[in-house]
Image 1 (tube, rainbow over the protein chains, first blue to last red):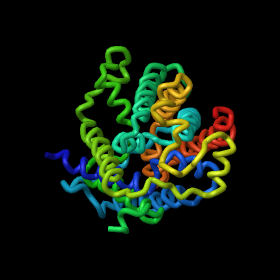
Image 2 (cartoon, rainbow over the protein chains, first blue to last red; image 1 turned 120 degrees about the vertical axis):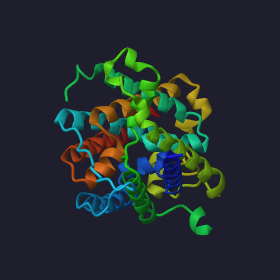
Image 3 (cartoon, rainbow over the protein chains, first blue to last red; image 1 turned 135 degrees about the horizontal axis):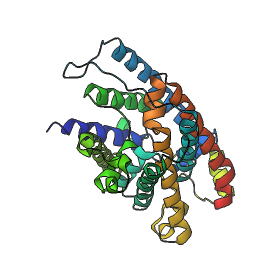
Image 4 (cartoon, each protein chain N blue to C red; image 1 turned 180 degrees about the horizontal axis):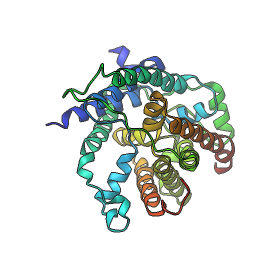
Length: 137
Length: 185
């Protein structure tokens, strides 16, 4: 039962990804063509409100529902990791027109072919784990 | 009800996404979708070949449940909340896509030229989908996060690694959109 709240938050996430057309391949293309404000407005307003959340977490004004302090783990740093990994991700994002979240939402929409992309993404994660000691970070 | 069934504006979607992030932290977890890909590898037994995947994936069950919810949300949205599948694109975008061989842009959410079952069953179409996925999966884990972990959480938390990663996302995305896509179709 403790997991049901994550299922409900996931439903909200799936609905907003669909209804705001973030799962549309075209919206991603349009964003990279700088032909619409839509995606920039979404990411920008989410980050703006996210910053306010982070402020409340850091000041301990908001704790978890169980009263524990919320600590946001810092990201791993490394110019090669972040930049090269980021570029590779961006190439895939613009080709698939979907990042990992929307891929799963598209499954719910009934798009069979997205399963090939999800399989590829899982394979990509495996290949990263397999080769991580041989590539720069 | 019409407020729900029409396409949601950016100023609705952005705050809802921020709220999703807030709730995941409030419930004692975090917001990051691409780590599920590693969990899939661990469940599939990748730990037998690569130590990196020797993790107790049960700790990530909440995240698997979250994406199961995302799938359900996609279903609910498609079947009950979306009377129209039309995406109101910039007319210039529609024209640009027609020029590179993708017709009727915006008539539905996705181009048939990439996502139709017929395309998927062709050799070229299958490899486009597969390679796109591999780049997303490899790139996300190399960078240490995807759009959720880096662009939303990381930027909100003023993290330099996330800023560099998001710059990388855009370099890759611009190269694909402006240079490679016109060559593929």
